[in-house]
Amino acid sequence: MTAKKSKTIANWGFNSPECLELFRKAAKEFTTQATKFQASARQVLINEGIITKSGKLTKNDR
Picture (tube, rainbow, N blue to C red):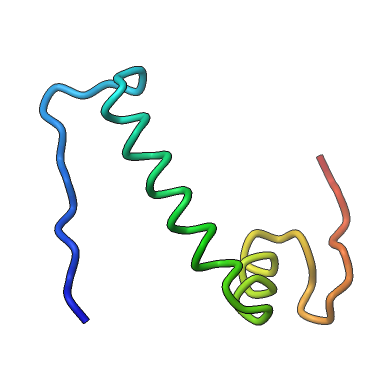
């Protein structure tokens, strides 16, 4: 497996088109990997606090 080089943007801001494009690519890659298998999708939901380890929805305390 080859390692990917991370890109850095000089003088970037949250509103820059380059930053937005990097975020979109990273989000798409994360989603692809997270939803590839049922077990990985479930683990993401547990890590984010959406479901418990037993598979039940967590309480919404917001």
